[in-house]
Length: 353
Image (cartoon, rainbow, N blue to C red):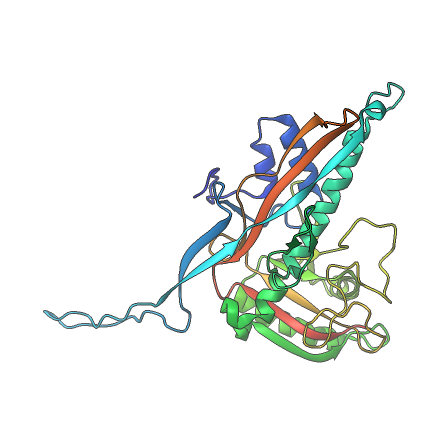
């Protein structure tokens, strides 16, 4: 069930924010969306409060067939086998607590509440960027305020690594054979070889986005720009994105806001960190064994998209029983769906360091 409908039947984050009449709710959604890399591309289906999302899809290994029949005879009926799929929504948010005496300080140029809110929303956006790529529903992510284990939804990487669970088409998972794109060995033939893998996947998958870490993006952009192989586009906030083969190149950046630069020796805070040749994250890999990959996704309600039970919301300030602290809460739930089994692709085993 879709609560808010545009011409495609769902809304992206920018459109969701624009629909809000309450300026506070619109403000927090705008701030959050501003740091989300897929804010214009990723569509959200509103589950109308439901915390899970069920749908049927045809088993890709047991499809209906196009048959023929004769006059006065029935067709030979061969229907697709349908499988029911269920995706679960995960809750994300936090509380902000501020001493009301500080909030009431008339000498402050800006109240501490908005400062705290911007910080929280920025961290939530970066966590969401990471979850799109690296979310793992089988690995404990942390604990709730009551001590219970919490998990993230499976992102693109796990939907490809667990291809049997998600029925992901493994013909869209390409091994680049350890192609050497290290700075000292990068050359036009190697870049052309990688471009051949990408072109093959783009032709078959027809993706909307490819996810590249900042180091590989810088290498490829320098070579591709010289060869006139890059184009640019802008999102609704005027940010410029590179495109290759008419596919948006998404630099997934850092997992959290930090003063630390992109550290090549330890990419723990990178969304697209160093990997093994098989595509498993290995952020502290030693020089000579630093691999990376390029993931692709075709985005839409019949392909890879997100779900939410309601738009991100906040309430506050509420004066706590201690009569000292004011509290705000930010509350949101989301999940991911690959409704199609052939909407995700991967070129892995690329040596970059």
